[in-house]
Image (cartoon, rainbow over all chains, first blue to last red; front, side, top):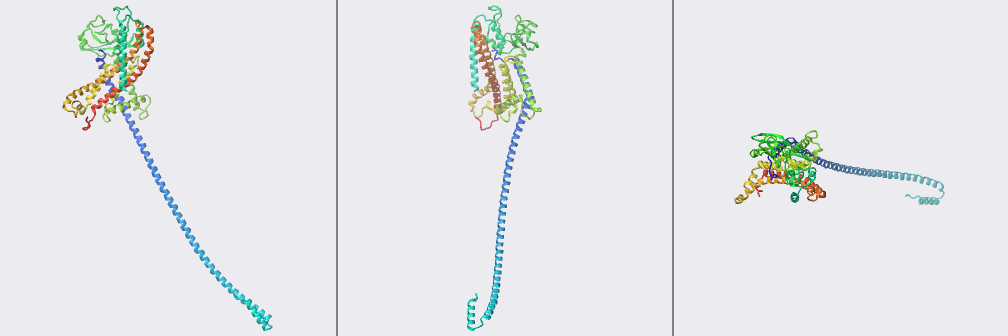
Length: 164
Length: 397
């Protein structure tokens, strides 16, 4: 069986040439190729990792921003509340003050009115007295003819003039 | 999947061979065959030679007969010239060494296809070089073979297969050094382009899914250059073998010598890198009683040698079978075309069927070319992986 009998020459050349090829390719092909493949894989991995890290950082930043925003919002709410309270307090105080002042003014006005009224009554009394004297004088002047008439007149007059 | 494909190939091979040999035997029994069929055979099938029966036999002068078996076997075997077409072939250098005669080199054209002996050597009918007593240029038929010197003569000629190996090596070096340059030059660190794109996925696949997976994360790197070279060498050779015309067509990986060298290299690497666990598992399998060891150790030792042997046979048989099938289908045309059988009409009638089968086989062989390179590399990795594997004390079987 020639087919399954190894041939010396072919084995000789095959061994030599194959080994040489392995060594040449190892130095000039597989070495550089595999090294750069590895480098590329490492760089891709690094890039992916850093991208992941950046994403995480962005997420963290977002959370931080949210927190700050929330704080600001709370602060604003608090300030608004304070302002409202202050406003209410001021308004209440003003209202109270106005009330007091109004009351005071009303009281003074009332006193003044009373005084004016008294003064007017006094004046009126004086006027009435004067008038009464005038009337009395006239009556006296006209009807001093008889005693009856004088008496009737005085009674009439006294009937009409009534002090209030 | 793989096993079924291999068994399919072997069944087809077996059936085809049976058919071809039975028909060719029948053809041998019958008388003369027209020579035009034979001429066509050499031109179309790209086959080596056609058995030319010498004129001194009983047949009429000029008549030749087709011997498909011999034709195929001549193609499968190595040769000292590279046949191109018809009677044209490239003569290859003959290099012979003998301790008495020293190193002799001359062109194989000097043999004139076995008709002449030159410088003390002749080419016999089997295509082997034999030493003769007569020096200088003499007729091969009158020369006397010197058995003693022949036995001590080493034929290291650049044969067709050696030539094909050199072509493969040239392709390997060209492709991979230029690809390597792309990685180191100005394109360093950039996305791959061109040829790089073609080989990079294969390199990464072999590295990650075959070598790393079989040998292990820690130790695989040392073996990557050998295994990658092995894979691409076998694959390119298989593909070249599928091309019917020069520079392809040589049956390199389907030659036992080439498969032998590759298997032996794997064996040497396995043995050299075997750690104490590997040897312990061969000579004294842990956890096995002494009595069983007597039986088991010889089996393990045998297995150690059997593995590369099977590796060799698998590659050789698959590729050789592929070549045999392809040639058989072509030969069918000329077997049926013989006058003694169905004549030219028979040949023409069979040719479409033959063509369909050949195309189908070519497709299958394309797959087998890759598959065998892959399987050889995978199994080599697995064997090396078994040799360097670190065992822990508890997970023994």
